[in-house]
Amino acid sequence: MNMIIRKAASWDLDAVEALYGAMCDYMADKPFNPNFRRGGFPTREDAEKYLAADGLYVARTGKEAAGSFAMTASPSAEDDRPGEDGVLYIHMVAVHPDHLRKGVASLMLDYAGREAADQGARLLRIYVWENNTPAIRTYEKNGFVRVGREDIGLGEFGLDWFYLYEKRLDG
Image (cartoon, rainbow, N blue to C red):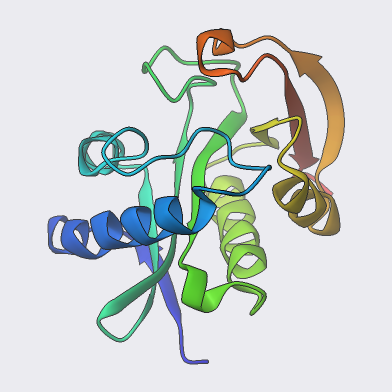
């Protein structure tokens, strides 16, 4: 597969929006769905917010977005308050259903690690809903280690507990 991973630009937003929609449709009836739903979360507006923060990335195969993720200094996907120095957070890892089990998520996580290290980060972190076992397996396979379990305030959506995973970038 010929894929390019890079920081997203405004002209990528249509493709990322289509990716989010396809992913939401795929996840709709899955027991590991962390409440992703078309028109709810994630949306184009979420992608625009990450793009404005210079933290949206896209994995493209030609005109199509095979995957996308965001990376920011904030532990929350909902605001931009920075976390700890030297720590970057991955948000909204999305892989198009047509590209599942082809290594897209692993390639994006590797890219995120290199990009974070280039930005001077020593740790890369990600929160994952405790019942999202496919994502958990992917993160663990890619060197992320579970370091905590937290209530991040999404209980009203049926998402009571999240695991915090991290990957050391300094060797």
